[in-house]
Length: 138
Image (cartoon, rainbow, N blue to C red; front, side):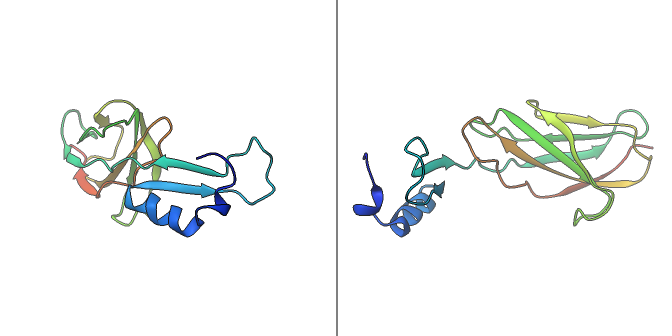
C-alpha cells in the first residue's frame, strides 16, 4: 500500500495487527518529510533462554550458556549481585555472537545473577531472559 495510510487504514488497526503478528509499529506525524516513513514495522526477536549458569573452571569464574534465537546476530549478557539487577550491575559483561560466556575475575564463592537478550539487524532487541544465578568457582 502506498500513500497516506491515514485515509484508508486507522493507526489503531495497524497497532492491533502489528501486535497480533509480533511487530513493533512506529508512526510519524502527518506533515513529516516525504522520505520519512509513515509506518515502520520491525519484528521483535524472541528472548533467549539461559540454559546454565554455574561456577566452574578457574577460581572466580562462572560459565553461562543460552539458547540460540532465530535471526539474532548478537547476544548481550548482564551481571548483577542481586536478582533484581539493582546492585553490582555490569551491563554488557558479554556482547557478541556466541552462545556461551565464561565470566572471570569474580570474587570466589560470591553469587552473581545473569540475564541475556538477543539483538539482530532490522529487528527489535528481545526481552531479557529469565534470571539465573551462580556462585563463582572457589
